[in-house]
Image 1 (cartoon, rainbow, N blue to C red):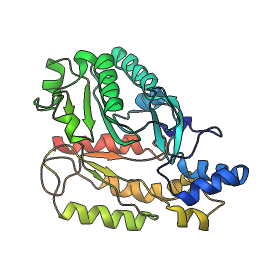
Image 2: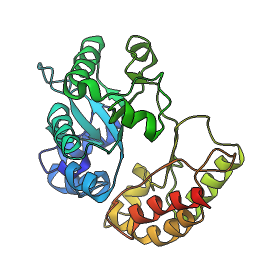
Image 3: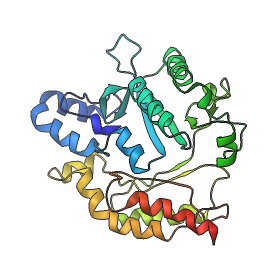
Length: 275
């Protein structure tokens, strides 16, 4: 949801004290740099859905100085759009595409207490209602279609999951935290050697720049770093196989998904199941 970050977006209180201090006292200089390294998508949620994206990494936050129950998305900065508005957008899209299924992975939960969790889960249930697939259903397309299910809700808080049968436990995410394609591919191959998880899981082809890296590349951006690596990461994607065996891949997540045929390459992996 980082497509809606802008100059008004505040730095998350969970970021380093140094970053918060720099943004507060040198805002006009520092904030544009933070923004360049926070944005991971430029397409709106509806444009991402139209492009073929079916898994969404939703990092949720409540602003500490906000007395309302409004929840936002966060990636170094808080988004300007509220969570509930985006979920309604997704519902409207699903109504127009009744055979499509999305996986919504709610995680991070910066600043959320029990009341905020209850509010968020209530919103999810209210908005998607009968479209949510319970976790006791094996999520084959046949089962999902026969039950009119269109949404799998992954929720990274086990105490909440145990209270709501509509919520699935957190989907494992292979996050390399690397700055180059070569190091990231090496990490992903190492994870594959250890065997795939039994259920849904995500292989992230996201490159990451920590504060030290960003300070050393002030004129760069996450987009620039990602686009230079995408040709190599796409070659890795094309070599992958979906399926149940040890070295198979399941969900693949990436940044700036409209570039370099990322979506097309991921979807075409499914044809390997027919061979």
